[in-house]
Image 1 (cartoon, rainbow, N blue to C red):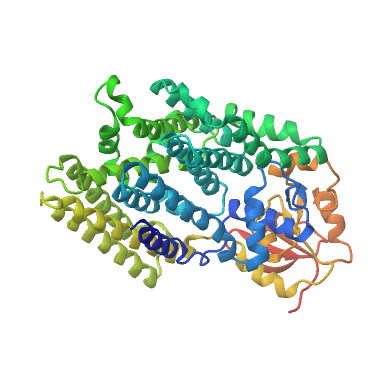
Image 2: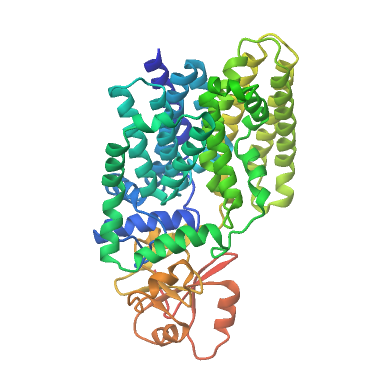
Length: 551
């Protein structure tokens, strides 16, 4: 039965995550950045020192870059091939949650938990976005669930394998996004052992062999890259870990409560049942806590990570993704336990909330063309109105099921899953229309015009998707940004230049294509005795050349 479940689950989630995966151009800056780094690895053959636009880039470890580089080498460079990475991790995350949920709480809980996770807004969105957040969240999930499953096994080979999986996945998480791969598991496990008074587990979790395994996976790259780049340690550990968390150096400050609405929206539609799931998972008294070991572990996992990031001075929405898998397990268990019940007052409250939100979303989609010009075309209006009708129908269907005490959960949960799945797929289908920041159209204009020796310069900006589409390094004028540190440790003056150097080259014999904001371009063209030839333009950006260009 479990094998059949896995085959069906993997097939459906693969289809779900895979539809329209390559339909949208790379978003900026994140997708451009996290594709360009592995692309440069493939081109240069240097897999030790990550580089962005030829400049050393030590903000994150290289595991996901290596994974993306393998996809590029095997499948070529395309939006589909590079987005396959986070989609595969998302698929593995659903499988991990299903497997752990089945072993701990039963087959139905495993299936429902995987479905809850896959159809949560934030999880689905990040399965289609090339960032480090999905890989690290899934690896942390595999690590922590391996530990939890290991504690349930008697001494023997199975227990040892689960704990080795815990150490290995923690090391891989560390190789994906740094010290949180160690900090989060350590913090959660320590708090759980303290509350449960389970210190005896320390004697049977294979600490020595596990730490050796962790070190064999996580240590070599850190040692080798530090030996090749003496400046690595200070930037990577001090600035990118401690200063990023404790200060506002990265300008991502948000108030302490920021992640509360993010969590409610990110877990939607299942956040409608979150309070009920948490309430069911809590023991009725302190003495009964040992009967809720797994649930308490999952609550600590979600709660401590939420508090950790809420206390940080640097907050971004994707940081919260590791909180979703434990909550999906808790919600999945709540739904599974309520499946055959007739007295489901808490479930009915959640259903009403879901219905109200669906109706509000439907109204918002109808109003969207009045506020977003890109949504004003007749074809897109028809799609938006279709989505609105779909949401209103879902709202009515959910309320109809709510009115029936018998089989309310059995009827309503599949309706919610179908509603949200279809909605997500429709949003994915139309999302390219709203992605107006991509410079892929400019790349399509430039590519047939380029000759050996041509230079492409970005004026006071770095359009991070363009190097990927043109498969070449850019010249950046009066811009440092995240490359500031790398520029100070080696000579990159050939392509990281100031404005004075730009105008020297502008008067030279080589052809230059200059990308600039509209306002900067208008100011530049007012300077006399400078030749400017317009190549392409949109509402924000312009391409100019120092020579007339003929197709």
